[in-house]
Image (cartoon, rainbow over all chains, first blue to last red; front, side):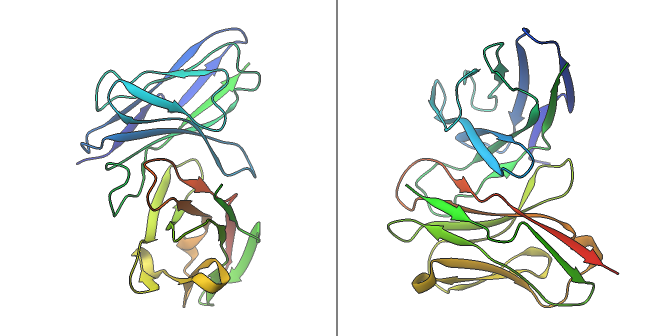
Length: 115
Length: 114
């Protein structure tokens, strides 16, 4: 079945450490997205990528980095520069932006806790 | 810039009662509009979407939404709520022409009383 996988489901990190969250999709979607979700704040866009080897900052990119070397993969690194990284992270993908019918398909999420 | 407002943070309804969740958006032209549902600790699932045409759209799980351009609204409705509908619901807007990103509302949490 096609879908999006995120791993791990739960992740614990010590302060000052970088950590990488995995996101893989087999939907053949061009676009991929990373969101951060905090209680009562909805979803905030961290980074998005419309095509391989290209990505753009979202609304809260500071302290995060991404890469898009393959169409199916869009890993997110939470760096030590991110001041408050404890949150629920959601990865999503969609068909080519600008085409009709675009909607985002979401992975199950990774809950990151900084100890 | 586009924005989405979901005025109700939390709604409680009795099982079998009707439901309406409100969504207002701000955008300069007709946008793409979406409703998603999220169960605790899970990702979001698309319920329905509006792009053009008929302003009343049908979705999965018996939900529907009506686009009202004059009110900049896209309210979600269900005639009879089931206990399994308890979840958080998000409205989202995306530009019609821009190859870019969606903006999500802050969500409405639905509680269903037996």
